Image (cartoon, rainbow, N blue to C red; front, side, top):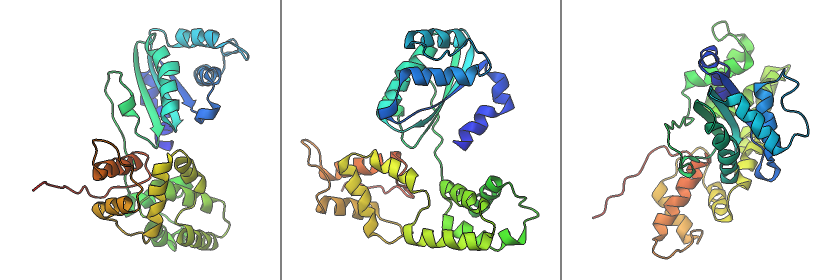
Length: 288
């Protein structure tokens, strides 16, 4: 989300588009078309009292949205899309509505999943996948979140620098969470010790973020994901071995006209697309 926000608020982006809108999508069970359209209108016209009147019907809100975007170059950010259901609703209620009236449109989606295969509309699609940061990038992100000067670093931060870089393993979300935690600490060294113990025992800090992704999984993927708990932390796992273990444990469903290994690889692909796994190296299997 910080990346999307930085792009959205960049002066060159703001000057290029005639109108920009931001919508933070709710979970599927809380999705409400009127609420979504109202949020979109509020982000576009925050100071216009006659727009986005409380109690407007969906049809009235649609009319106001079309009026705002009609014949204009636009950018819309759809933030926090967590499910295929929410994405399909956004395609109909926002993208479908605006694209029929706007001139040229661009969209930014923030999501842990890859939903592009569910979008059959034509257009250029670029997927920006978060990758592991190197030590220099990790520390730059840490300093940026804390708004501290990396060049003239205070001794209290210099003492924990190597520890933070090592324990965070280049994971951007973990680095951000560590920086936020430490920003609330009066004693940086003591604060880091508490964080380090939590990382050693649990392996993560933001349990809510993982819970959201886990709860969205179908049952057959939940058991496959939980199986990673049998492996040592911070160790690479060979894909072939993992696939065979899933099959041996009967986690993989037997489908007609499909090999078990092919089905298991699809499980792995879906977990990767949901940003729950990181594939370091693709294993190439050649038939004899």
